[in-house]
Amino acid sequence: MQAACLVESSNMRILTVDIADEIAREMVERADVELMSLARRQGVQTLVAREDSSWAFHYPAGSKLSWRARQSVRRAILEFQPDVVQAFLSRSIAHAVLATIGMPRPPKIVAFRGITTKLSRRDPANWITFLNPRIDGFACESEAIRQAVIESGIPAERCWVTYNGVASSSAGRRSRESILEQLNVPPEAFVVGTVAKMRRVKGMDLLLEAAIECSELRDVYWVLLGEVADPLVRKLAADPRIKDRVRLPGYLPEARKLISAADLFVMPSRSEGLCRALLEAMDAGVCPVVSDAGGMKEVVRHGRDGLVFGRESVAGMVEAIRTLYEDRELAETYAASAKRRIAESFSCRQAAERMLGGFRRLLEKESPGSRRVA
Image (cartoon, rainbow, N blue to C red; front, side, top):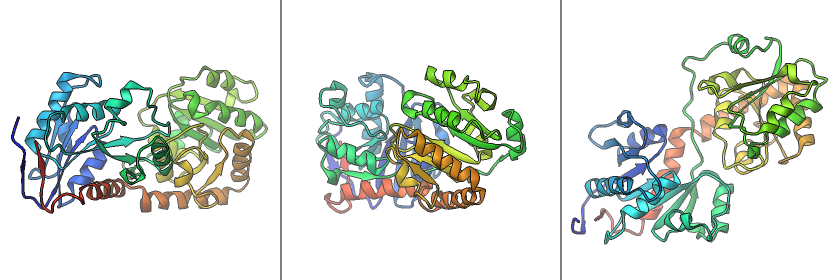
């Protein structure tokens, strides 16, 4: 093991583990940041944006207790000497915690939290991840998540909100007509769409119950993009009142582009940290209708960017859909506001800035210009 020492530097050095590519690129663009990025994806070298201040490497996949993954993170810490390690998945958090055992002056470790479930002290896995005393900070994907972390016993000053960010995508955008033709939807249809892995928590059964309640609206088509993991979804989709106007194409890698053809994006989640598909739909200029679960109500300002209804309230969802079906101009106004909202507050650059701001606050107590080195 290398001896502990202090290295003079004016830049903040960050080691990220399993960060989203777009956020990493935004961090690298900062002149005062040096970045090393580890990811379990092959071809991760594409993350490198400035050769003089960034490195990106593949590291081995494995369980939370994987020795190879732990050693890979440890080597990166010893070689790169970061001020902060930001770990995004529970496995990578465990790898960072285990990698720093025995280091006299380890870097700050920041855990990313993306769900609103409270941390259980009865779960042994949490003691090598989120509840481990080596965790110095929590980057939370929404205020709802931050509150859940605080309610789990984590001091509020160690938690901050980053939100997610999406890269605006207009490249390769297709016409609405061609998308609807692919989905077997008439061009004149009013399209209610969503994108999700359809588990019970996503509330897609509630969306189809709403579709049944609106079954007399014969020009409304319901397009649910994503893997169907809840059998109730297929059962409700087969209801004779709506079956001819429900589309379940399954998982499609181009779902982000396809949802741009919808008139409404509806996310009826029972529980939600912050839905990335919602951000992408808003960026595509689709009017959002969401439950008040988790961070979605933080993104969609009710009556300004779209409509928000109470979770598990089919009646509230039906009222919102009918309101916007009957007032297409209002839906277009909300859609335009939603698109501006993403550009102004939820870009990848802004997400990176919020992340970096949290790192800076963590390091404020360090000696100016000093670096922790194992």
